Image 1 (cartoon, rainbow, N blue to C red):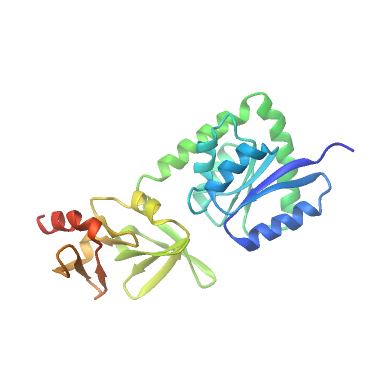
Image 2 (cartoon, rainbow, N blue to C red):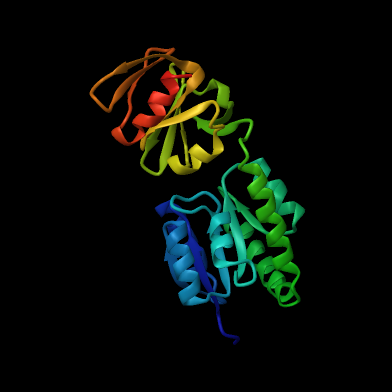
Length: 255
């Protein structure tokens, strides 16, 4: 019997990692060598373990899946199966470059098919085809980060879209952010740092580590202390700025 293929998994959701562990354990041709809960861990583990296959969640804290590929380097990146929730943009990008992905939720048959295809891609990688596809994928991902026109969020059992101009303010929520829109609030799996990059700085201002406000929704700015301010938004929400961001608030008041 041939040597098992060494597999690294990276996903910030414990249940998702557990599912992958079980699927790998059920396949004698695979061997789990590393398990990571965020992108930074994944980069270090890929460099240390040098797996033959990486199963990589696209959306993770610290560093997302595309960031992992960029950090490790396209030429050094092992054969990769990307894992994503319902994201039509990402799916089109993977399909355009003939790179395999798992769409959550997936079953054992889909997992087996992805692994089989990954083995075929590994042969292509030796010929230099896959790195070219990864470069194209990263270029598409970079283009996507230029102020997307809407965000897809889950509301109950369905997915809805929220446009940036509908957002009053953004609040940190551990490994998620909360998009406040009127009386509604939506969880989105992103970091505050990345949200700051995804929102047009001409329209959105970060006023503390845990808050970004839509400038068009600001109705009043009041001093709270010598270096802090209370920002009142159109729907009545009040956000207190942090000292380190005081210069941004003062610049806002001078507009």
